[in-house]
Length: 420
Ligand SMILES: CNCc1ccc(Oc2cccnc2)o1
Image (cartoon, rainbow, N blue to C red; front, side, top):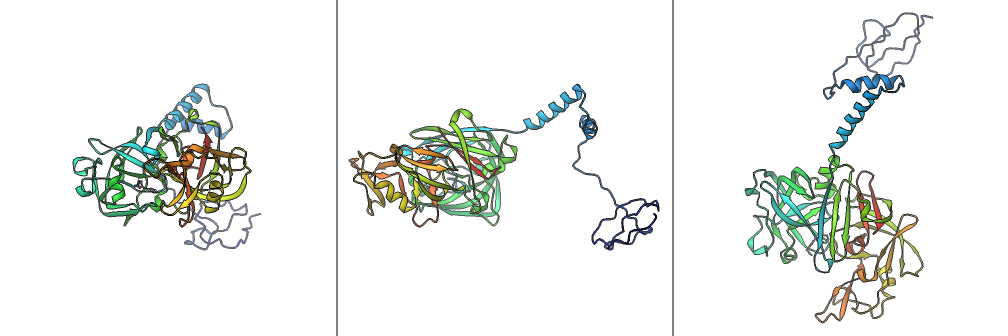
């Protein structure tokens, strides 16, 4: 007894004040900090936690739980109410999204600034910039779009030195500078959202007369603002939402919804199958195990890696899959003059099933597999399914997404898919 164990000195051990009573084997001091006056002892300076908010009932409850004792009923009720209030801080939102002709894109109302300026934008889960037509867009490039004017918003603040430019999969592009302002959508709002104002838009956007801009809901890692990237509207809201997710319920030829922070159980049938998302490229990227052509077709095991992209109209898959599908469509052929597969508009189109996880699949009805006529007589139609050649991954665009209820679950880095 009384022996001090000759333990090897532990580098970096903080000073701990353990009064040595000379009888027990005290732990050794350490070699990293100053020698304490009494060998074999140390001292630790405590600092108050500046973020601590004293709460009597919680402190009392802590004692009971420390000794595993049940809380007195009135204390339990109070604790329940306190946690209920903490939970209440969370929010949810829901906004209608309306398809343009042929479901080429879906437009959603958003309010920017003070007083609120109402624009219709294209929510795009395949990009991460929120940009709008603005007072800085040359008049020659505006054809009826509503323009956000930061000079008319008392809450707009220029993000000095910030600029952006972006090009999309269809070759369209835009660029400009950046303001921070209040943005409201579907009953949720964020007070200092990066609003990228366009000082230049390409002809495709000018021609897209009902579309006042894009709101990217992919990951902020691919935001195009420089010198510092900005976070998306959803990322800004995420911690204040009931759940860290949003859902897309696009419909064929009818309004649907984007919801934030909750899952509407009435919006889908059966169960939701979740599948992992790989966000390393900044997209909601996932892998389908394979597909089936037609109701009586045989499942084809063929991993398809692609992104869930509400901003792309069509379903773009590997050419082997596309060829196999159009083999079942009489009169279908690849027409370079039309830039894709075309078939007689009165052709019978088989349904197409995209597998999800181990034992689920999303059925795309045959009629979704015809996009729009390529000639004024409506003789031949452009396929809703085209190849992903040159992209590097597949794109599960609106043709696929409008056949499903889709959960974009950032909290668990996964995508949820259900029939509806
Ligand atoms: C329709 N062309 C203009 C236009 C509307 C939306 C977008 O942006 C896109 C295009 C393709 C993929 N993702 C976003 O461009």
